[in-house]
Image (cartoon, rainbow over all chains, first blue to last red; front, side, top):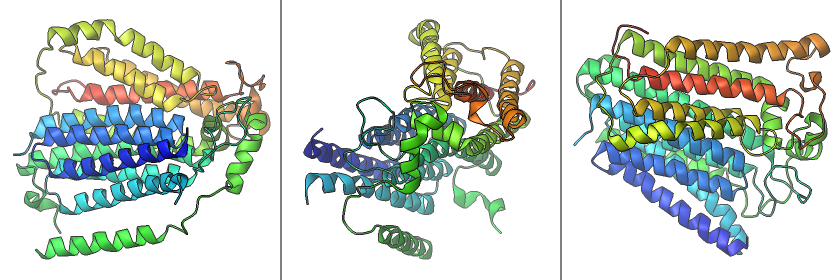
Length: 83
Length: 118
Length: 229
């Protein structure tokens, strides 16, 4: 892939991840924060692919984005979301 | 500043930004589950930084094929595989202990969990 | 007020330290020496085409054993805490879409997970993501019904058997060659075939079964309401 396309993809994804990370810690509802952290995990899987690491991308997508989100959702279901 | 240099350094800026945002979140949030989420964000940033340290643009993925000449360093990727699994184990324990502390002290605010203070 | 100022100072100091680690503004060309060795001699030493799997299982197999121990202790601690202090409640009955999907989809997901586990030395994957994919199929079945499928004793016995298998494979290497987790107790074969790479497919199977059963028992313990373990 030509370098300018890679540069645009990495800058776009990186900016989206940073804005989403700040948003995940400042939104009011806890369920939105959990889903946004799952989205940041999945975008980091895309960045791993851009860095030519397919093994790490599959592992992050299946463990970091799926199992971790279920763990947080259970925790939120037990103590309730904040206002 | 060619496009390759911008591509290479934008990856590290993303990882460092995630680490700093995660540390800020751990220090400043009050809900126990949000502190766990900020910790997971910082962990993701650290994993990105580790894989970036073994990356050189122009090389291909570390799977040997007949058409592959130069490959990315496979050692940081192996370490990050371990790190991702340990990150989810830490998150699971963090959430379980946080839920128990919240049920014991009656609210999910860390300022109310008085028995943890020394 | 003081707390937020101190927090801000800590974050700024840490970010200055983190940013000062970056060297000059250039793109690297050569790999470090260890990485160079792995890329040149990985296939002829271990027989596995996927170099990351060969590093994880063969070159650094002891680190993977440590990781398996960490995952085992974390999942056992979570299940133990949730057994002694059950915080579950009655699960809501699933809607018809979820119930139908939970009857159709898990077979394909388990098949894909088994593919990822067994082809760890040929294409990206390995024991850890494959085990997580099989555990997500278990989660889907659990979400589609109001009870927990399978018994926890079955999951615990699979987890123990897989862990013991990993240890026994290591000791086999010690008996034959005098080195724990030696890769060549089984002949290497030709790289690129599924029956190749020495002991790596067996170790991937053990790791995959262990991770799948551990994550499944953690998910099953989330519905624990007290009573039985």
